[in-house]
Length: 234
Length: 262
Image 1 (cartoon, rainbow over the protein chains, first blue to last red):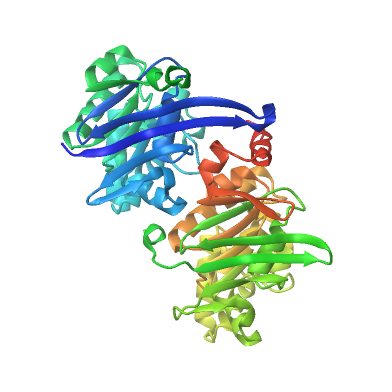
Image 2: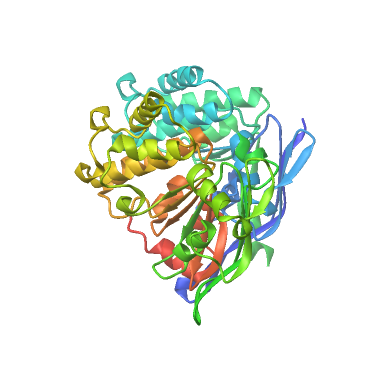
C-alpha cells in the first residue's frame, strides 16, 4: 500500500519563557511512515511525546526540525513548513483528528457538531445530519440529546459526540488521540469497529491508545516513542 | 471551499507604519488576507491593533507603507490612491465596519429598518417595498424580532444594537468586514449568541474579516489566523490554534497563560 504519511527527522522542544527560558526537549529524530490502510500506534509512557507528535502532524504544534510529509494524490505537502491556509485545507480534506476533548461551540446542537466536517467536505446538510444521527446512535448517545448543544452533557457523552465528529468525514489520514479512554466496553467495541471500517477504506491512522485490549485489536505496528527521547538520542 | 483554493489574496499589506508624532502606532506590518479568511489581531490596549485596523480601513492614513485591495473587477488597487468617490463607494458596498460601540456604526434616531435600508439606498436601491423586505429578511437573520423594524435602536438592548449593526453592514453583501472588539462590553450570554451568529454568517457568506480583539477565546472561535501585537509590532503570527496552543514568544506565552480557565 502507498505511504500516506512520512515523518523525517522530526524534533521539537518547548521554550518556557515564563520559567526563565527553560528549554524542555520533547522529541528528536522522529522517523516513521504510515501506509494506506495501516494503523500505527505510538507506544511509551506519559510524557514521552506521543501527543506532541500527533499535534505536530495536525499542525497544531510547530515542528522545530525535520519534515512531516503528507501525500495527497500526486502531491506531497510538508506540514512542517506549510502556510496556515494550506494546513487548514489539509484539515478540511486530508487529515482528521479524533480526540476525547470536545471544544463546545455555543448553541450548536450535537448532531450539527458531528455533521459539520462532513458538510464541509461537500455533503448536503440533510444527508450530513442523517449520517451524524446514525453515528450518534451507534455510539449510544441518547436520541433526546441530539438536538441539544453538548455543553451541558456528561463527560462521557461529550466524548462520544467528539468521537462521532472525528470519524464522520472522509480523511485519508486519521489521528487518534486516546479515543477510547474512559469509555465503557460496549462503546470501546464500537470505536474498534469504526477504526476497522476506516482501515478497510484505506485510511492511514496514527494512534495513541493506552487501552491494551483496543491496542491489540487495531494496531498493525507499534512505534516506541521513547527511542526518540532526547536523552536516548544523546 | 474557496478559502483554501483561492489563487489571489483579497488584501495585501506592505510595511504599514503609522507614527503619532514621535510615538509609534504600528510599525512595518505586512500580511496577505485571502478570500474567506478571518484574521484576528490580538494584543493589549495600546499595542497598536486599532491603529492598524484604522489604517487598513482607510480611516487613518499610514505614515509609510502600502495597502492593496482586489476590486470587484479583479484589479489590485492601492487604497490610498483611490479617489474619494471610489473610496466611499468601497466603504459603503464592498466593505463593512463593525464598531465596538454600536452607536458609532448606527444612526440612532432612525428606525432599525431604515438603518439596514440606508446602505441599500446608498448602492442605488430605490423600490421601497424591496428595501423593506430585504431589511426585514436581514433583521430575521440577525435574530431581531420583525415587530421591531420600525423602532429606533435607542430602544434596543446592547446585544440587539450590535446585531443590528451587523445586519446594516452585511446587507450590501460586502467581501471584507473590519471588526473592532465586536463583543466588547456585552454580557457573556449575549456575547456567546453574537459569536455564534458571526461564526455562521462569516462561513455562510464566505466573508473575509479582520477582527481586533483582546479576547483570545473570541479569536479562537472566529479566526483562522492570528497576529499578536505588542508596542506597535507584530511579534508572532500564524494559524490560530498553533499560536494559542504552542505560543513561541514570551509575551504570547504570557497572554495565553493569563486566560482564566472556566
